[in-house]
Image (tube, rainbow, N blue to C red):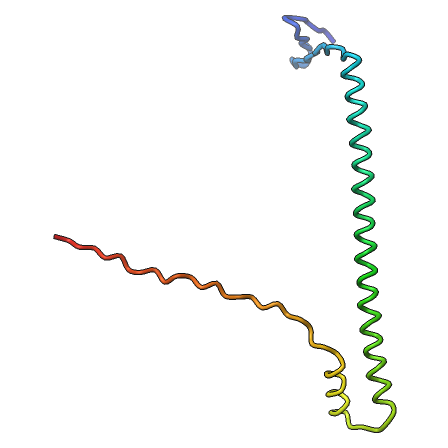
Length: 124
């Protein structure tokens, strides 16, 4: 593999490829210290973010578990009221609807667009 060096570039004659060899300037002590400090701060921030996301996920799971438990308690209350006496199914459904509140639905407000007026042209 023959190589020819011209103007700071190394050229491989067998494949005619230019191989750039860039000489890097050595870093000063202050630059090295600043880089290490930045790496440490970045690692610290990553750990904090990871911890915060983990806490948020745990909180979300707990809230979901609480809502599931509440719905189970409501269903048990309805069943307890129903099991005491013999009532028709229609009345049972009414009681169940009364015990469980309807889900809250967000209403989407229609945006009223102004009616474009026809432009008036006067030709003379």
